[in-house]
Image (tube, rainbow, N blue to C red):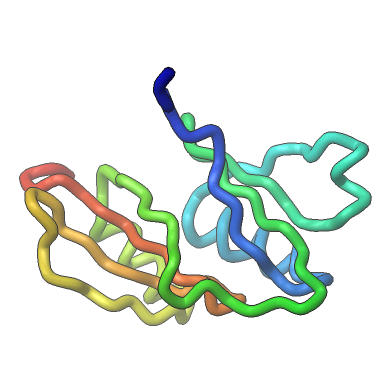
Length: 123
């Protein structure tokens, strides 16, 4: 038995945050929205994808942002992600390189921490 891949990562958001999520994840980060199955759509939230990466945002009525736990997305153009976030008014925090990767963090509109990594020498 072995784990072979990640199907999706889920973060939480407050009720009614779908429009805000779309503005950040689609317009700033370049994700595409995925339709939710009808039996799950009634719960609210929104799903996104970029290449083979899926990110689901689920509604929590007692929402608390993930400030430490976070997804880490491998990207091919870290400078572009950084510029897009800064131009949209989102603060970016650079961190020390991590064994072959440059990286930065951004906080989504709900306070969730997101990490982006790019291999040294790429993009």
